[in-house]
Length: 146
Length: 227
Image 1: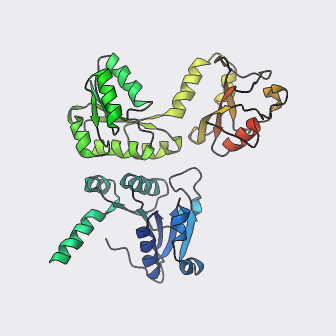
Image 2: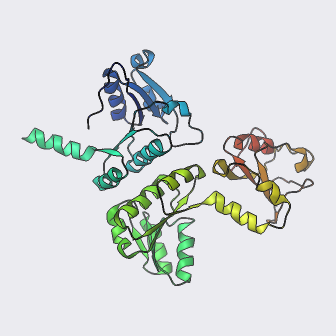
Image 3: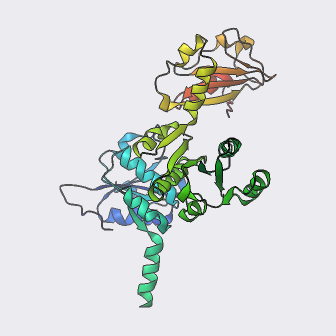
């Protein structure tokens, strides 16, 4: 999936929920592309893996919170967010987060990473964009063999 | 009627037994093989062992011919996904979901889960029926926002702040309400101003997420320990 291009007149703000090294790497890469990144995690350890320079320069905002807690969630975090990426290790939690962001916080584009292809049809029907990491891996291996 | 239930826990198992008792056909899905084996020994061969959010397991449980699917796990995101999978693949099956945390009521409603059960609301409804003759109910029903409310149990410990062991001495948060007192003898009583509170007494209270800690501290002091 290709993310919308950032233009000078409209900065794309991306909210990422993550708990893995992959999510940290994705946040880092996207911040290189000048997207405005807000990275939320319940894990302090994960937040500490974010590059300090990116945080101090304001390219990545790191917030320790549980975004599934609707009542205590600070609404300003999701203000003007264009894209939400759910990058935890749990397919069901990623889908749950996307539905909260889409229907409670009205974020227009929600994307979740999933491992189990069985959820592809359901999430697509629910208007959630999906990235199947198993398919990506298989495709990558197949390509390298060719 | 053929009914499939996900989760053989504190809610799923009693529901299964109740439905079997009134002659419904039930299949119970749970991921714990030891538990499933034990239930099969007791109730007959009614379980399917596996992950309830795996379409293969749902199919194996006979969702194709089920009229109702009830998701009863303690995880709301699992209950939601299970119901959505069933709605997506087995369109004629009605889905019912337990909602453990009332803050997700709106989300489940928006997503069209055909029916849902919120435990907090159920307990309040039962209380309403039980004490409908009491003027005390008037105070209970004025609580403003049910979605933000929760019921907690507080056990009075040794270093309680209840001067003279009397409820009237305590000022609790405005949005909180003491519902029931369970004495050391196991007697359930409605609270009164002159209520005697002993160590070990259990207090069932309705509060909000914002005031929960404040209420516990009022009743137990700094070393609070609620359940």
